[in-house]
Length: 232
Picture: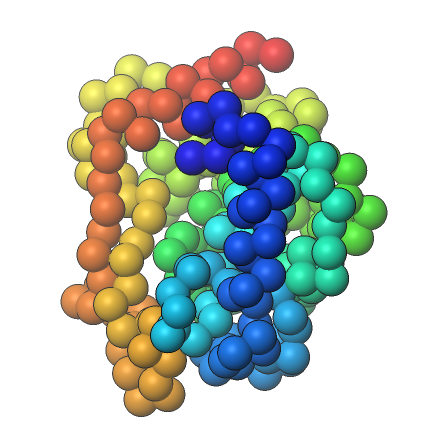
């Protein structure tokens, strides 16, 4: 909303101050992340007054993009958010356990799409290491014949952003006539994850306990972005 509604610098500064009231450890501490990240004072996904902090690499990527877009100085919480993204990539956790890394965008192509959009738009020294690792991982994922077409679109879009010389393998006619355009889920609402209960967390990744949000117009926008970047 802040990036699309033309908000002022004052509005963006207010947002940053608001974020500082909802970082991990301010009032409550996160439970449902990897143990090595529980001490990070990174920003939380939500502003919920009574909710425990929650980390999502995609939400953090969007948030950092917004702060940098408005040329705000990154504080310690932003740097801890960057560290979370960095370590999730370098440790391979974003490939092996994407639901824990980003439970609202719980697939590697979605996580890659968000991180690449951030690191190719802004110079973030701490994430330089991730660039080659992500590029290599994209090529490995694209060799998987079971990958959906829209996931392939997201990965190819990321390659184009990374300025990789790559010839798309997608048949455009098959893509635009595919049911995936109507049914692709870009965002997942996890019903059990916010509760941060160790027992319920076992069931949280199951589709039965998720709402898959689909938007055909959004998918068309992703396809349009892919086509535009493919020409450059």
